Length: 439
Image (tube, rainbow, N blue to C red):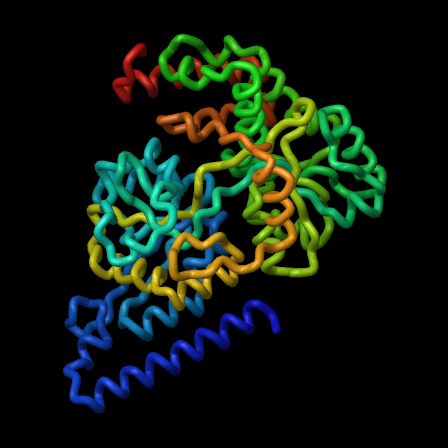
């Protein structure tokens, strides 16, 4: 039985139990009907709440159609999904927050919400929600000592090179330990008629997977105070020659013909299909892509290795992503909180954790046996401490302009050096606008 079928069966069982419980309540003379129908503050009228999500996250477990239907049946609250263009999601949300036309819930990631969306000013504190006391790891959902976001998982995504194990085995390839070995492997894959590397750089954020993990690895091994120095204006981005080299390395892969041709036309939402069709062998991305592919085809065997910009680099560990937030200006805050409460219920959270093979963040929800790729990451990188937190965790400002500059390299608009020069100027302005001392 497929995961989807199992999930459907279990949700139907939950539905049946809910109906049975509702019937029992009715038979016992409970007042109930408006309460049972009701997330709409007991009015009995259906309420529709809006949940905004990036198109790149359209496969999120929180917007599963069966799950939303189940929530609506239980509460009389309908969840309408707003899919935002991936490349514009930050700008669109910033505009909505500025004019007070906010969705009731948004899916975003905590680290970026702090810098991009003014977290403390714009979002509800969730410390006192009923599910908060059951959390195993509050830190992954918190900022400034308060819980601002929701997730059933405490996984932090790992970033590196996602690769097709079957293609590697068929071609007798080993995991590349450095840049030269990586190019040699890519050339062998190309010779076999397969696109070695998929770059979906229509989405500007995707340009930063290579650089973010590589910058972080470089800093950890060579300049441990680098992020502090940059954030205190004691150093500029152009002061670090390795950064220019890392940016140039990524572009050189394109120049050597080792990537898809239309890197600026292809987007992240094409990636799952590319891997399923075995059109591509590798991609710089997080392990969430592996899960998305395996959700479509459990027989696909994908793995992840570190960005090979230098010898024996560490795997990038990104801050937890894909959390749900409730804006303070939401029209239906109580109904939005009911949705989080529904997702956090032990039965529903267990369904999601099982389906997505998450590491549970609730003390009454069991972590399932990890899939092969995730167990491999744990064994090869997490347990032996061969990970490094990616650059985003150290930045307190919007990095979108850096991503656009990286994108511009592929459009022929900037060199690697010019990317860093432009970013130095923008970074200085953003930090000054934020009132950071030293700028």
